[in-house]
Length: 486
Image (cartoon, rainbow, N blue to C red; front, side, top):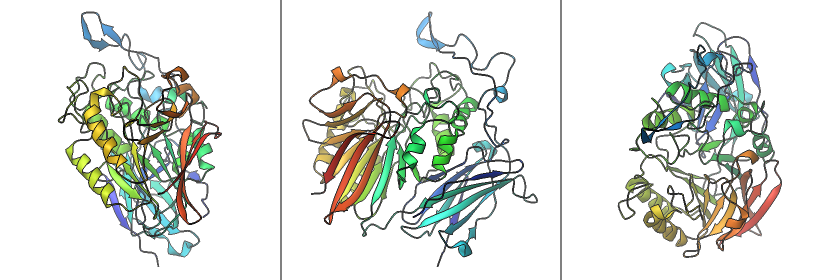
């Protein structure tokens, strides 16, 4: 991985990030702040040829696949993803990368006399002109400001600067008020503001979240306009969505944890050995690799983070280790894999956090639609799902937060009592696939709408509380539940 390790040794107001640019290269995708804990963070950067994504390019044709009449298991496309006689660089919202060098300047808030500069690092053309900086030896519960600088070569002046800010987590023996937000399902063509992106991002910023979790389907490789039938088109989709001003401004100032699901790995309901019948030259393995280049990420895509005395979260991997969906259910069938399951149980049992949250890309409790076969709430993975639900039910103050479903809900497993909170998709146009007529006894809340989930960990009369709120895309509170630690 193209990543620099930077050790910072230093002896809350969050400033809105700013972008400055003079000459190539630029940073049209801004920065992403990831994997923040009490003493470290990863800063993702990318150099670009232009200061903004192309806004006057050709529109992509919506070319969907069709079934091959001679082979019902195969798909074909009746036309090209890019119009004949044209190239990707002519298309709308293209954001070409640029060779060059990047560095960070980092300092604690109100201490501009303590600026630390990283070494200049060369972006990697083989990783879409990106570079990730690993910052270590940060102080807990501290706000840091930083500037990402880019230039074409070591002899040149800086041609672009992007300002960002982050706050580290509190240590695990001190209580801290923590606010976080969770989303799922983000498709470019369903954004609610054509020029700026998804409006939930500035709305979430108003909450000043300590961190943000994207539970997956960050984009849709297998949706038209264009279908990502190559590595080039797959990277284009990342550059397009994170060139949108709303997304860019949010991620320049908000620590984030990213989880991938099916559509941002490869295609709908995919697994590693799945046959490629519609994704052209683009493979599952290439999707895995592109994800790691496009988001700030550590050694593993399953991990746990502690935010003070009262909150610990577990972020799990749901694609890399899974069995085929059509394999008969039983002890050998898995979504998580043996190693991840053992890690999950061990680290949960070791935790003394007041609240423990499993944040999953897909449902653990459900209920889901009868025709789905891809998650632990489906009968196809019931054996492993039962094990996870039973284990969680044996823990105090442990809950599930999930994405994937295109509706908001709170549900309770009738057998174990495990409670699940689903965020719903990022826009109103993305909501659907379920209805109020599908409401069951498992549902404590159900709303077929876009929006996001927020959580606030605090203390009332010295006792830890966790307040979940479902929000509309405009921020309106649609549902609120206050949980008190036993």
